[in-house]
Amino acid sequence: MLDDFMVRAALAGVGVAIAAAPLGCFVVWRRMAYFGDATAHAAILGVALSLAFSMSIFVGTMTVALLMALTVNVLSGRGYAMDTLLGVLAHSALAFGLVAVSFISGVRIDLMAYLFGDILAVSRGDLMVIWGGAAIVVALIGWRWSALLTSTLNEDLAYASGIKPEREQLILTLALAITVAVAIKVVGVLLIAAMLIIPAAAARPLSRTPEGMAIVAAIIGMLSAVIGLRAAYVFDTPAGPSIVCVAAIAFLTSSVIKSFRPAR
Amino acid sequence: MSLVQVEDLGVRYGARTVLSHVSISIGPGEIVTIVGPNGSGKTSLLRAIIGAVKPFQGRVEKGIGVKIGYVPQKLQVDETLPITVSRFLKLAGDITAADIDLALTRAGVPNLSKAQLSQLSGGQFQRVLLARALIGKPDLLLLDEATQGLDQRGSASFYQQIEAVRQDTGCAVLMISHELHVVMSASDRVICLNGHICCEGTPAVVASAPEYRALFGTGTGGALALYRHEHDHGHDHGDHNHNRDKTEVAG
Picture 1 (spheres, rainbow over the protein chains, first blue to last red):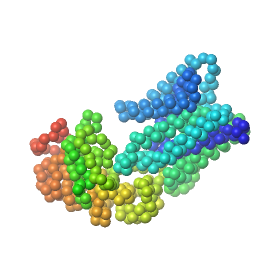
Picture 2: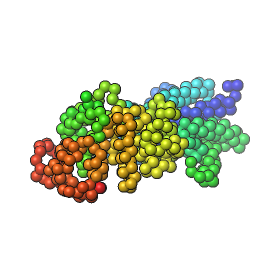
Picture 3: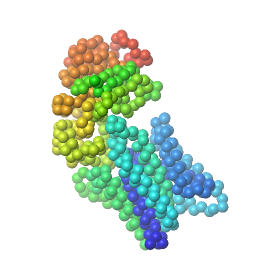
Picture 4: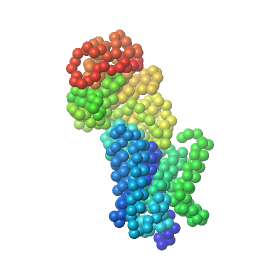
């Protein structure tokens, strides 16, 4: 079964959707959308470094994404607005990454594969990395779920309950770095944030509890991956962007449903 | 034995010292109110007690097994986060449906458990926050201007609820309030704070203290008092700045 590249692609997409759903909910609730985007952009530097030192792309991108996120955490509140800081760091990392890639001789690198993903080329090994990473992300967020939610609602309330909001923020940052690293092959650097935000946003009008929203987001993400892949096959369109298009249509649909119904 | 003992506490944000040499102690079942102008470090004191800010000097000591319930000044629930009242209350830990019912009843909003947090009115929200603070069966309740944004009737009934809670559960209450008439009628003890403790004691003692009058004027009886700090009231306090602007104290 795994011999079929379409099956591997579908499994890869579903794996990313599962990891992205609960994390994406927190990204939406905490208004970290730009943070996710920036972390993903920085990952291209990780790709360049991985190729230069011929180490695993997963390790390289995760390290750079993590460093980037930690740097932002440390520097924020020291005289720069968060979005300025993110803009500077993310785009610098992206630019340095692109420049660094141009120095690497020998291998001819198809940058497009990293910018937009190359889900149809997912190997068995990639699949293991993706599902392993997704399992870690889901386990991390599941483990800290209540503490993360409390910190998201109010930091002082969290302190009063014996929770350290900075530590929870770190957990989210780590989960984000892992997700970026595993999603790069599936949707590419430029569309990772879309996989985080769009399913979660589409799930919002259909949910009454945080858990419900995470589950609905996962379902929407998985369906988007499967339907998007199918559409890419039928219409001969690029796979990653097709997946995101399906998610966007799901968002549109749920927004329309919401407008026909009283707020809940 | 005291529930919480604050000793020689100092809090600093960057180079700005907001609290210095603050020592207080809260006993079981007491209602203690902190009053003081804006920027006087009231919220910082509560945040130091719950561990949200690290003091640069002194310490906060909690009695063994003392549980604290905290009602924050304001809490904005993002529209993007769907959460019902009962789910919110369950976040406090190992909570049963009976606990939720009891806490909501004590807080005066028994029928709200299925409502969405983001759809509540200001008064309902404060009561849900109160329920959240009560659900862990605290020995000490901390309230940071819990009636901010409520009209007079709303805040009066909120404080009646606090009094009822104290009678039901026997928990002590440490609260910040701008509403002097409430403070004077409901508190066992009043602490007048302005970067340091200006004066403290029973409401009657504090009301007649020169330091309090300097802060809130004389004979206001809880009515609107414009605060104008006098420079000549004498107690020592390192680098603390007494030359603050006029601050409104809502009555």
